[in-house]
Each structure stands twice: as structure tokens, then as C-alpha cells.
Length: 147
Length: 30
Image (tube, chains in turn cyan, purple):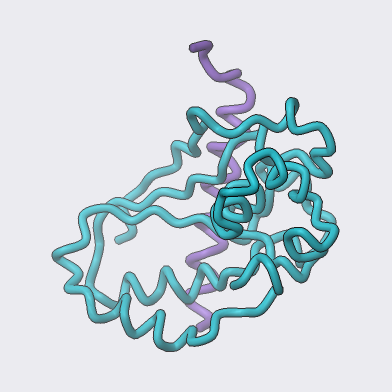
């Protein structure tokens, strides 16, 4: 998806095909997050709640800013689900389809579900000093075998 | 570097487990 316009994947089937083309025994670890759809609120630099964060480093790629600020647990949402206002906050990157494509490769190894830090999860970070760029992430420790 | 708040870590661990369960439920419906 494009954080600047809210446009969806231009070729999602192509994304899935590229994942399925990887031999499962060549995947050693799988980590998946989701991200808020830019259209759920407003695209970046068009009134989104992450505009102030992006303004602190305008040279950063828009996708980087969105992936840091809009990251969420798949089907649970931001801030471990505490910031969910509706279905649009559960993530819009089609994580289940991505995950299934990985499993379709035959991969049965360890997977994890990182979701960003509480510091990057607060809504409306008008003051970027309280919304610092992440130095280290608190990760969900729910790694498990996917068999 | 300070250690993470254990209550936050626990909350995120539970949320991660819930995410995993919901993902597998969603995959089974695909």
C-alpha cells in the first residue's frame, strides 16, 4: 500500500506468487506484522496522525514512517489492541493471505508476531518528543512453531 | 538501557498469542 495515496498493492497476486516461489526449506524464520491502512484515517502528509512524526525527518521514506507508526499486530491492532476503534484498526496489509503463502511454501519453522513499541503506538503524536524514533523494540514473545 | 515494563511485556505477549490464533483462524477460512 502507498502511505502517500492510500492505494492498495498494485499487484497483490504477484506478491503472493513471489512468496510461494521461495523453497520452504530456505526460510529459517518468519516474522509478520500488519499495518494500518492509510485510508483508515488519512494518508501521510494529508492530515494523518503520523504527519508530525514524519516531519521530524522529512528525508525518511514515507513507507518507513508508515511502517513504524502504523505497525500493528495482525487482527489485534495497535498498542496490543488497546487503540482499536473499529475494524479498520485491525490492520490492512492482508496478513493472513501473506502468512498462508509462506505456509504454502512448506515452511514449518518458527514465526513471531512483533507489533512495535507502545511508544510508537500512541495515537495523535502531535509532540514528536513524546513519540521518539525507536531505538529498541519490545517484542511479543509469542514465537511458536507453526506446525 | 532500562528494562521494559513487565506488565507491558505481558500484555503484548498475550496480544501476540491472540494475533496468532486469529491469523490461523483466518487462514483456515481462505
